[in-house]
Length: 131
Image 1 (tube, one colour):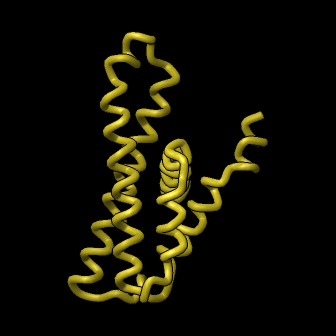
Image 2: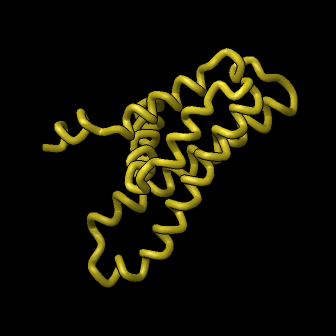
């Protein structure tokens, strides 16, 4: 059942598009302050992804009362992640003649749940890349 969900998941496609953006020549060749600003935005987005994904994972094991107490914090983490993704794409567009405009449009139409899935995919990729 879980593998079927992953096969049909639109969030995975979006995450792959984000990876392509990270690896694009315009962005990997940035220098100086532009590079620093971009790398800081990437780092912030990754940290926000991990923070939200940890909360989502812990949600499985929380009691009803714990969930009630943590719900506002979970929403805050989710919002921070969504904002950091949009900021990162806007920054990438600025450095690459709006090459990633379609990706930004997708974020404007994307269901909130999908952003959470994207955070989990990014967290997974971070974990696997650090074996």
